[in-house]
Image 1 (cartoon, rainbow, N blue to C red):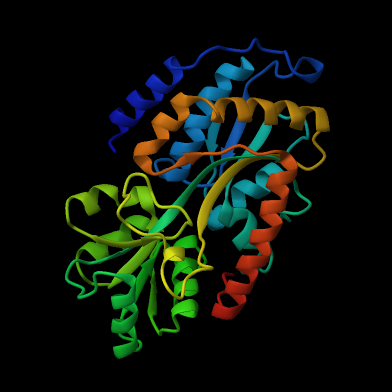
Image 2: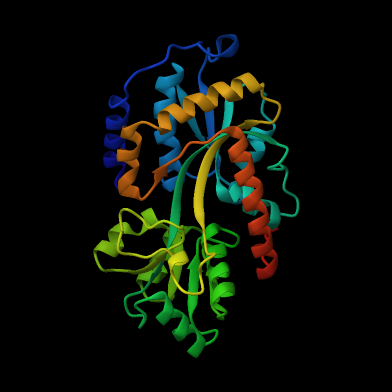
Length: 328
């Protein structure tokens, strides 16, 4: 979607709000100045879109501007590290994807933050999925046919990813393991290049965020075979989830995101921010805004969020170890 269209949607989202809190209504008069929400990826992608929609609504709820600060690098590790070392006063927060908190610990040998001890989880806020798509020239119209093709041509089919250790890469590795097929991984520096070669027919398939493919799928430029979450995408309701398919009952790559503070942030502030996040993510306007991108609003308690982080950290550690993936 073009930037002007995105800006218009964000404006509509803001005007659709039902109310606005007054600044300083939190513990100790918090917040009495702008709050910085660090996004550890470049502007313009799905993560940035989700973070900015959250920041717009939180600004209204908190009565102070929530400023998105994009700090990309090292698969999100640089931005996460900056927040881990920030003051524990609620004015520097992290908007994190699943990968930063649950995949990076197994990929990077010298990671300078620990998801279990460096942050105070506030709330989960969004969830989406990856989509398995193939070039239309590939003679497979279902996952079963793709698996059969891969078994007949071991090592010949390729899957692109946005880079080593990304969720698109590990989705492919999980697929390889569960399907018991030999696919060649072709890593790129970002989604755009990976999708570009898929469209050109230079690679067979890819897994990446569903919202990145909706327009190409509807135009017939790519063929969707399955979504990686347990629920089907409301934007592509005829595309099955992987877990519906024989042999893939345990396949689940749900790409959640959420907000965290540095560890040691006062519990009262964490609770206040959780209540604000739950309120804005529960608004009908948020659901309406996110629906075209195949993104669902979520909310959780800090404790629930911490439990999901630990569960998924163990899951992806096993996948990374099995695939032998390492990023220096």
